[in-house]
Length: 235
Image (cartoon, rainbow, N blue to C red):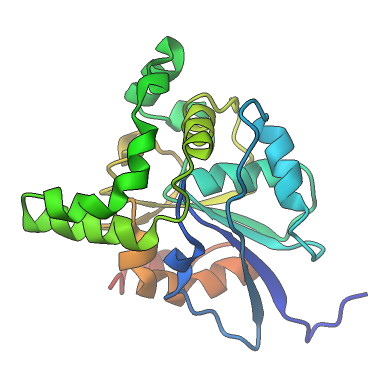
């Protein structure tokens, strides 16, 4: 039997192609939590999402862990959650089922148009900052350059395909969903039953880390937030 004084294991899964360094500014109290950051593995071209989740399960060494995933990483931890018992499952800037995907992704899945995306250009990410023609785009290019972790074309083709074609019709009611109302990848109008972070974008795990540092401990321990905290102190 686990001792009450034992720290809670928290596994973080980054977003599509992202490096675990996106969690560098997430600071959970070390006396209460043990943080483990997962990294993307290169999939086989035709590997199923379920099989991939099984492989990722090999990196989880604790019983009843907390699983936290960002964007496509949120999809991965939900698939892992189907294979093990967990204490909490939290997704950030992600979706809980196909119904929450925006129409353009459903269209891409239906038509197969995602297959023509130039994923090989990811190898040239270092040039994005030079090509950006506005301060906003330059800032985004620097962030992309800083946090991109996987430029492997095989991985990117696989990840995009499995994101838009994710076969999940019914959300797991145990999933805790945190979403920004300015998310440009998964617009908030398609998201249901989420904790809303005002002015939060798709990369809020990076630029709104103070919100997560304040609220994640309570979410992990109790599974919910006090209502007043959802809308206050969102710096």
